Image (tube, rainbow, N blue to C red):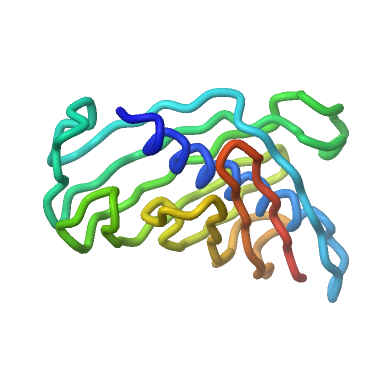
Length: 163
């Protein structure tokens, strides 16, 4: 897998993790911001060979990303650098241009110590350095939250939650 693809996938995963942190604010009508870094990432493909840099994923094919989340700030009662969860991201190609100029939709879930957050967006398909996802809900203290996840290539993820 090319370094560019890996960077985009990492950025997406980090964004999801940050989004989860924002939800933790807990108070009604409040804003919570969580910050995460990716400790490790694994990728898989459905419908194409992810290891062939020349492969153009067909419409309907998917790439799946698993990211281990660590704290970029003290949160969840744990210090910076502590493992606090994981993110699973499922992206489907909706055009035949592949990773370079293609488009699609990504759905994800971020598991953290006190629940999980769900999110959607097309962050994995952009060529830019910053990607965004919309928080669509969750479980536990995140059940009624909305907000966004902002990821940057190599810069981690910030999750902003609104209760």
